[in-house]
Length: 76
Image (tube, rainbow, N blue to C red):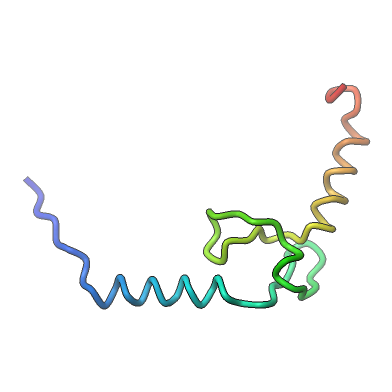
């Protein structure tokens, strides 16, 4: 049977501090347009380290509209 070692306290503390630091940032850079914007311009996504998606709401809106117009037959 494989022996499982406990995670050291310093490692869990480091991870908690890192996550807290990432979640309290005020600005983020959009991967689509490259602009640095306030954090509330990004939708919430708990799977990411900072708790926000990587593309701003404006860019996601444009992507959604493009998809809708190119795929209206499939959607409707």
